[in-house]
Image (cartoon, rainbow, N blue to C red; front, side, top):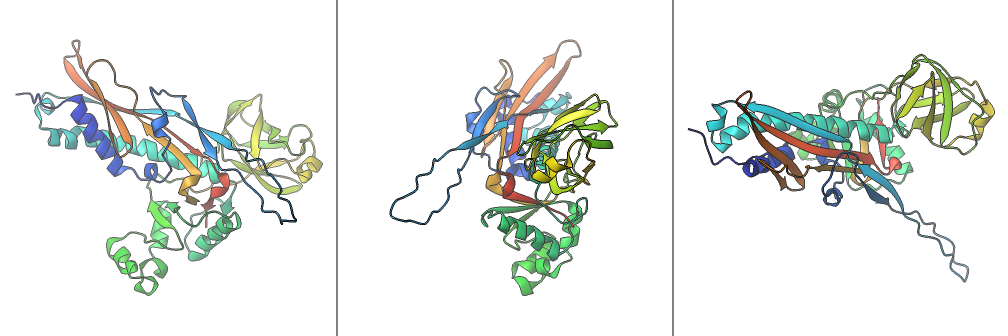
Length: 375
């Protein structure tokens, strides 16, 4: 006998709770702009304000007025993730708790993995111009952590709300350090050892996400050269000589140019056309890069491992549900996480389906607010 008490509203509610409880990286960013996405769709954006920078001047009898100019970065819903399952006759007669375990939880695990993988990629791309250690290596010692901490302090990143987001490989190394597991460094160390988790150390709350991997740089292969004389202070650079006639370069890919020791990083994805591309970069073109001129060799640096320390407020994210469909659909929220659940039936295949889906977006809004942690 079918269980008529399972409704889209009940399933959506359980889905939102499940997704909230399972998210890792999705919960390690600021998500206070989610409520601004109404009747949302992929491509929708909301502006996230970046605080202005003021200068303290010596008072000499009169004040020095400064314009308080706010800047903003757009947070865009870039992805629409869905997990669809066919409901068997047996499953259609389950109680809600069993339906949650057998249908809802696997679907939310799949969506959680997609969200966390995307968020990690965005965070690593946004901070790649600030790198501590050797690109492409996993951090393994307290010296690596302290090197990253120095960059954060030099950049005057607030000490509160610092997140350490690392891979399982880095975690395995850190778990072998006495600083994390010995009671000599705090009573929580023994609990960390007993439960095999990283305790708060060096002013950082540590989190491990198995989705942390290695940065994707795109089609960087080739004998790449500057294309034309760079313009001093410009935030774009023309380069050519790629092996690929057409392709993509991804935000965060870093490079140097012969004659200039500056490490530049792409601030946006770029397309290769005719073996050439114009890339948006940070920092802006230096005098040394101008002097390097046309035809200077461009060397792309190794892809970083996705380990980072950052201030939570430096990253904005959103996870929101699409509006309900007209029939058999509901949206429910739990502590800021919303999910849409939609039931449908096919008179052709004589089967039932349930679709879970969400929109999401993530953007680093303060690139100096974090550092890539390498070995």
